[in-house]
Length: 311
Image 1: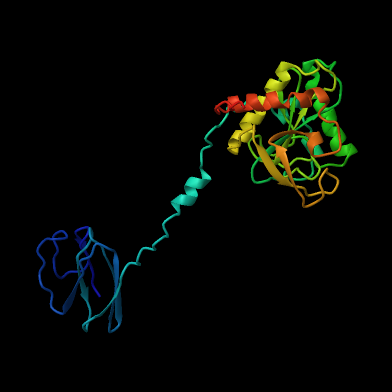
Image 2 (image 1 turned 90 degrees about the vertical axis):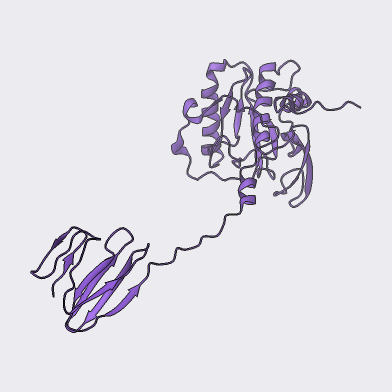
């Protein structure tokens, strides 16, 4: 069997001639020409007595092939596969996933766990998550107010160690800390902007965050403006991600009989509430609890919401 390579202009054998892919061609006795013109690559199997040839024809390559065979060849054309049709995406779902809150607030500066020196080897479980942050429960650490703000990282490390080693919890209970100087600290691990489930409010940890004010806030005058401002900035940002007005109320379902509400009972809370609203305690202290209306109003202002109507 003799073959010609027309694409390169070269040839093998002694009979016949070829000039380029479209040049003149001399008829060769006993030769059978297989001609295919297509914009898709097609594989042609040529079967004859004692010979088989494989010729690949493309739109920009060889259009004519001369195959020598003692008998007329049988051509089997194998077309290129049909492209697979993919379903069109649901754009409605995509828009919902990337919905932008109507009243977002700027993310405040937050001191991370790494910065306050959290020993991550103490944790043995991965973080758990809710669907969205629907409420903020305010606590106090009840550790006194005589500290210097530069000592807060050490105070938080001690609370963290006590919760893990003393109470055998998987991490520190609170999602965030705020000190009397207004500095905000990351608490429980899992991601600052994510709805991390804490261990701060029995029966109501799911879809809420716990914010612990560092200090004791029972006495009048113990609450600083910097402290309430820091709490408001944090609450405005976290609730803004969920599109929630800090001045509104929310209905939550208790998951534990040890809370103020039996398991399965629906309870209505202010979106920014005190720990005492959900559990039998005086936390976060009388003075800080009395500051909650002002904190709610400031958080709403930071979200850019219209002022509430009076009367």
